[in-house]
Amino acid sequence: MLQLEQITWNLPDGTPLIQGIDLTIPDEKMVVITGPNGGGKTTLAKLIAGIIPPASGRILLNGEDITNYSVTERARKGISYAFQQPVRFKGMTVQDMMELAGGESMSPETMCTLLGKVGLCAEEYADREINTGLSGGEMKRIEIASVLAHGGRFIIFDEPEAGIDLWSFTRLVDTFREMQKQEQTLLIISHQERILSIADEIVVVANGKVRTKGSREEILPTLLEDERTARCPLGKEERR
Image (cartoon, rainbow, N blue to C red; front, side, top):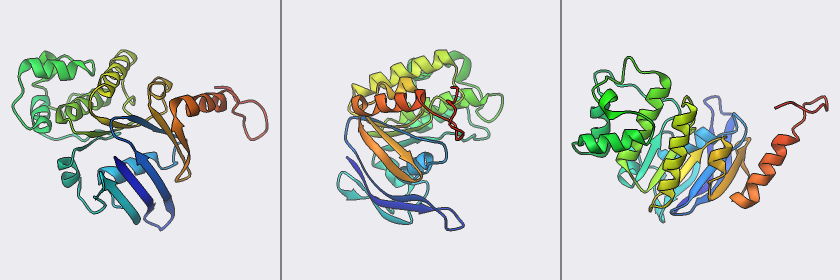
């Protein structure tokens, strides 16, 4: 179980962005964080992963205070993170990246299985260099596959749908369903209804605070209703 206790974080100019968030992520659940752009969702994910430190508050993993742990230390504790914008490494092939993430040599069969989960063919991609010749969408899928290779008990996906075609997105949703059946905790930042619709719990973050949270059955209907009835500032119904 991961717990955030009064977590805050400020922009470089001192403007508060994350404002006293309390949140509990239960074990072996799929929790989706959603909300308006600029509300603090990605920042919250980076705070949990250890990419940025909080200004105040505590982060506990199974009762252990990991607030001051580095990304590497948190990874050793089982926390994995897939960036919204994947990092490129010059001279590294897809095979290299997958084996580095998995911590061991990887057979063609394993490569095929992992890359297949994100809609890629291992035979076509294994020897390609990830710094050149790959689109943003391909890089996104490869990074997600590397997170799957690393495993971990607590996995964070930051807008995994970004840059992914519809067919690959369908495969990704199926992969999330498979992971729900295993002993893993998933924290996903997403606006996608198909991902929200398979969540165990939904957390809505806006203006740096948790606006509401609860089960999918409680929260999703209210989000869909808000989407249907959204109005522009002039009072006219906004087209979606």
